[in-house]
Image 1 (cartoon, helix red, strand yellow):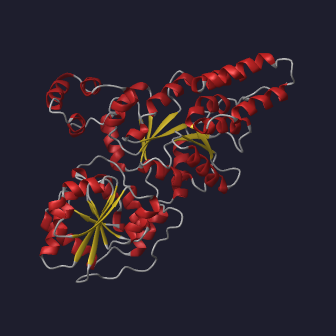
Image 2 (cartoon, helix red, strand yellow):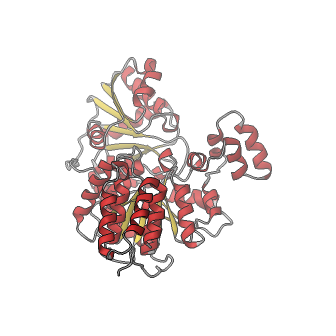
Image 3 (cartoon, rainbow, N blue to C red):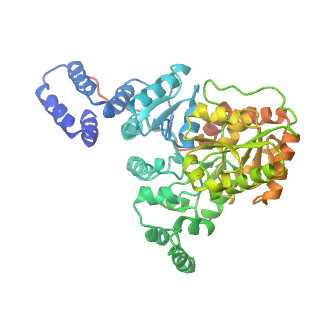
Length: 476
């Protein structure tokens, strides 16, 4: 088994591996504990970029608090994707038998996250470098391998991870996709190396392929495929992924259509409601704001998909109608978007918060009277922004489309693709008659991280039975 570990180390540091390999033979007459201490000393000298891997190997030498366990694999902070924040806060404080794996982009963040997760106690989640996944599963034979999947560049490591998982079983029978975004065309293109034209060929057939290839020639390949209902998830199902958990019923329906004819199991969970440490909700009942100065906010990456320009136009209409109003935009890409729409924003009092940290983001949410979170198309994605706005007790106006129709009485809904006049009227309406705080609290309680973890473990409970565990390094 030590030889296998040396081969794994060789992938990441050939020089270190050669040194350890020489030590193995030079020290072959030593007692095993002496060899182990020598290897530990060499691992301790790894540069910071490899420290997380060395730490993970060391952690795997210790017996886990409980077996069988599941592996949960996801991006984590400081990565700038909502999946990272969601996964971290979903497992923070957990006592369930879960090992959490992540790509390591910053060693300092990795160890800080590890310390924070371990505050729950010795039976909580262990944080491990995803590069140590193969070794960990050889040791622990995880009951299920749950992979958080989104459409951002941050998830481009997933195809390589699946190759590792397949090497263990000769298939992907234990892999469960936790789907944050049903449409994963960007992930496929970045993770598979396929060109846009190859992507169309791989995901379509017959007359649909011919039609979409012609339409994709305009350059909007992902949009063309998505509008045709091609999410890209069938690619992963054809590789052997058979189990899918979603954050909404809308996403589950999209996958059911996409995976028709395949033996896929699809079950809806939900996006948990949480707040970052140090951020507390306002527990008071919201007041009626009709006639008062309103701060209207829109959160997340701005653009056509979120009807940001329609929100700006609605606030302009309120301003032109004599209503005292200001606009707050917060999220990644806000500064660039505002520069491109400077003329439309010119008459308004505007506050911009570009690329905010989690607590900054929540403080911006607390500063608004009405948050407007729209979607143009039903892409099935859940919204961590809406969940946090509900947790903070803010008035939220959403488009009644896809997963956004599942928040119930905790939000105020407007028809999808509202006119500027209708959206402006809806903003005034929710300011005057906000959702009851009791409905917000009920939604947050029913969708807590604890309830999410219970639902997750229940969903994977019927997975493949675990194999026998094996010692990582043999004793004398």
